[in-house]
Image (cartoon, one colour):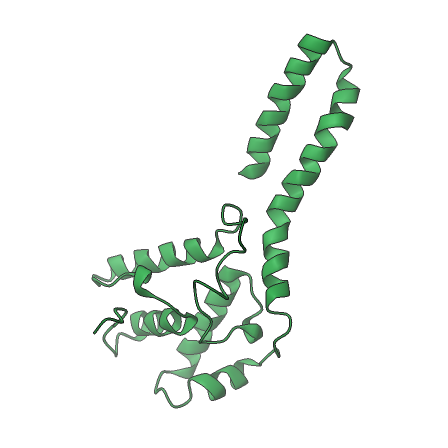
Length: 171
């Protein structure tokens, strides 16, 4: 979307420069086009690079280690937990072995300051979960989630329907 917006701005500015300054189109491509293309690429790629870098200092756990360390005593089915863990990691663009259940949505998983408009992964994930909650008839909302564990447990409950959903932390 941002690349299309950048292209539209480029076409408008270039047209104005050709008409007003009688500039050669080749110069316009060099002076405006290349920097605009570079800016578009940076804004499209940087958030995912920054997100991966944020978690690079953590040990990369295997699927077995994730379940054994965080969910083995929970009684939740291993295959369903790991399936949803992979789904969330993929949606967030974070290597699954570097995520932790205690990762907070407003801290570790939030977009980097200043890049919220470009990094919509968490918002898209929460919208998707809200759609699933609505479709299943649940009254709870993803807005009540505070950690990755809240998301995983909700998704597992939706998939298994063996435990009631509880996303409201006030009770």
